[in-house]
Length: 147
Ligand SMILES: CC(C)(COP(=O)(O)OP(=O)(O)OC[C@H]1O[C@@H](n2cnc3c(N)ncnc32)[C@H](O)[C@@H]1OP(=O)(O)O)[C@@H](O)C(=O)NCCC(=O)NCCS
Image 1 (cartoon, rainbow, N blue to C red):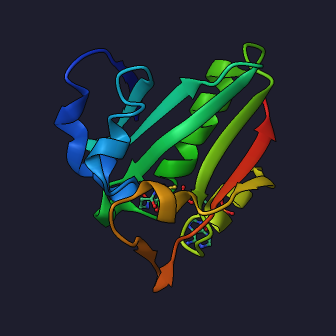
Image 2: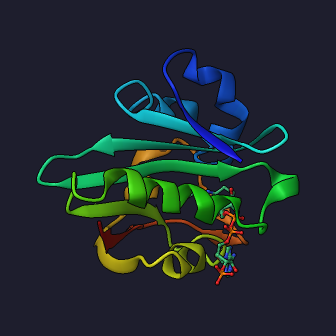
């Protein structure tokens, strides 16, 4: 298993980016200023993008695992890599997500805890309704864990 930083042409991973964030102009808000990593293990398995939000906060903006390889530990492996890489450099790793049963339990099992909500984020910023597991996403749920 190898994890490497992607320095250029981050849009080559657009299919994976869109799995986690289905509107491309929302991805454009953070992709270039973010730091992207990919995990390869006999081919591409996972990508993530993190940004410096100031005040010691590192934010995970996007994480996605190839659909055929989900639930095999790759997502958690990339989170563990971020923790090891940024421990001591930032105080907190933060992630914002919809209130969905397909993502919140994953983050909780990686040590994140609910921190705050941004009301109506999905309905205000996306040009179409976003559904996950049949649930319409409305508020952004922020979870944090110490680094
Ligand atoms: C969410 C995602 C990144 C998780 O990565 P993954 O490789 O499938 O998850 P892992 O196999 O590393 O799971 C790690 C832990 O989370 C738990 N977990 C993962 N998804 C879960 C779910 N839907 N419900 C309950 N637990 C879950 C696993 O059981 C595992 O727990 P354990 O360590 O106690 O065994 C991945 O499924 C994905 O890419 N989903 C689509 C894109 C997406 O929704 N991205 C997030 C946008 S905010």
